[in-house]
Length: 251
Image (cartoon, rainbow, N blue to C red):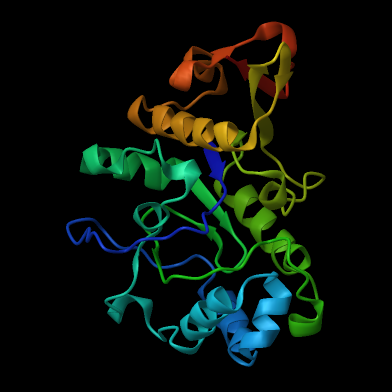
């Protein structure tokens, strides 16, 4: 069983995890290809492409220009699960993880990425910003969905033939070709009772996805039915709003 997560724009490598294993990227050649294309862009082009401020464009221009040839030899890289610090990762309590927790995560958690394709928790990465949904046709001749879809789907078919728990956002999970995917996908929905109506509230849903990922890791969950016991952030499974492909949790 694999659990899929989205990446995070917020990244922080100020804390070292040198005692942990460091693994090599699944799609290293594809990464190098993309980086070479993005290195050619000017700051203004990055700003327009990503719809970001001049300050963020400057930051990401420098990141691409200084992207290490060998990630294993750079002091700026970090294991992916330790590097991401956005809302999804708030409740993934890596500061209290033991090696066994990281090893279980390495075997069961996969992070979808516009730049790296798909990441295991202990894969070394360098800081970046590249959302899956941006239009890269003028840069690489195709969208990132087109660039990654077959590669990621083929990888998933090779590595996981039972269940996939989708905790990724639509922007990222749409990269998977469901028509050729062998594993059964379970989508997870978190809804809040807001002014008498059940609604998906973005920030709350992001944090709940991370809480469920943490629950999966700490409890060594290997079958979808065991997710029904999840009560993180006060969400509870609601059978009436669920079906065989979607588990809905409300609070």
